[in-house]
Length: 373
Image 1 (cartoon, rainbow, N blue to C red):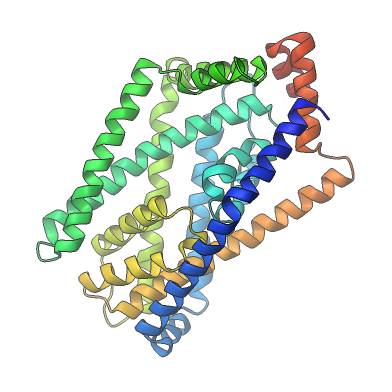
Image 2 (image 1 turned 90 degrees about the vertical axis):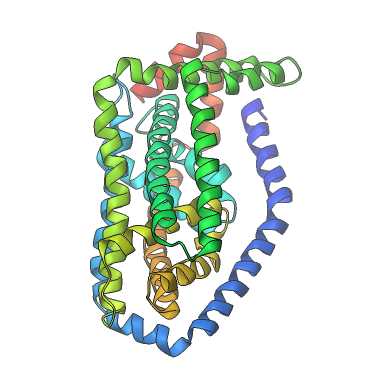
């Protein structure tokens, strides 16, 4: 067994031992919380809201597709030449990785994002795909910081009586500011954090090849802005469009399910900013079971909607996510079929091959070899 194969196997087994019991607890707790808030809001009222939506759910799916599309384009712009990422490949990888992240507990942290470049390595060299994924996520993080900060400031300025929400908003703003400062320092100083870890590990038992790849990844990420300044604003605008589409989705959903109290753009904006915050904090919970209903239901009451309307909104979001997850699973199933027929190489084969070529030809040759494949 090669080093790469053994490493993948050990990580996989270690991940199962570490995360499966905790993952089961998270799922059970989320499900219990989900059922509690459904009962609290009233099953009949939630059912009425879903019936009011009806075929409007197709419109919700159409709006949600904008979010997938704009982030796919942002990823495409994050790929540096001579490589090129096609929209169909970026879109497919995004949907597949989101399906993994939304269904499996803790998958967003350790599987979902890194899976994107691995899922299309037959189309784009792994290093080019991984570095562009990191760059796109940096721009996405910047957009999240701006969007959530605006939402929390709006809460502080408009909800003076909601002491709990104001406290959460203040803490969130403080944490965002601290994270932004730390991130800005890391990028400005080009801190070699990842390669530093691999350098220490390579002195013990890890192959030096991993340090070389980490260093090349950091070179690509830190050098992106210097080499592609003209792309900065278009990528940031695409990431901003992701959040605007989220606001539009909530606005349209509330038009259907809460006709007695039509929404405003401001209320939709507040709800989406809270939704982004919940997604960030509870990303390890599959489909944000329970926590989305709790947060959206309480904030909806502050915005003068009913709690059932907020819980219904959260449930409709889950239904939307499940539809995209089904599509992602379909893409994954087709990819598995393609692997079995030899159309796509398996992850172990690809990494094993790259490791052998790196040892005999050097790190830079792997990029050329993979690109030609």
